[in-house]
Image (cartoon, rainbow, N blue to C red; front, side, top):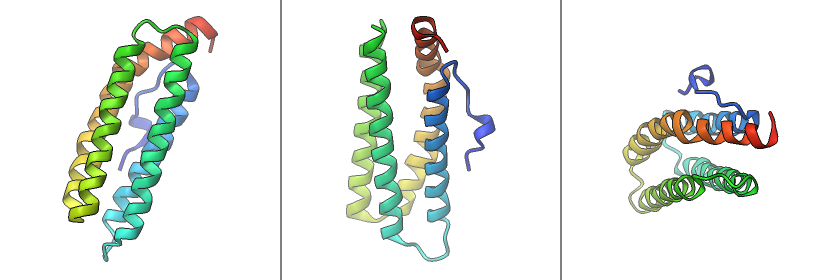
Length: 136
């Protein structure tokens, strides 16, 4: 489980709220995977919510970066695109194999680690720039 108190916080509060929502979805995915009887339809539902939320999160963040002419926009957007494509690839593989280990390893391992690193680096810098341009 992701303890929201351990998530890095950034200067722009809206970004923190979105990160908390993602943590909630990842925690729900973990709970669903840990249920006694594996419910693939329920896992599919959480994965779809997570993909939709992540897509909206990245889209909104990128729109905001464009509004303020964020200098590292292309790099930040590229990282979003890479991760979103990776998520989609894993979900597509899950739909073929139905291997819960694949989902656990990626979403509860690789993606969670990436999220912490991304917040601590790119999102922190982005949030500081947003606050500088728009105020917080």
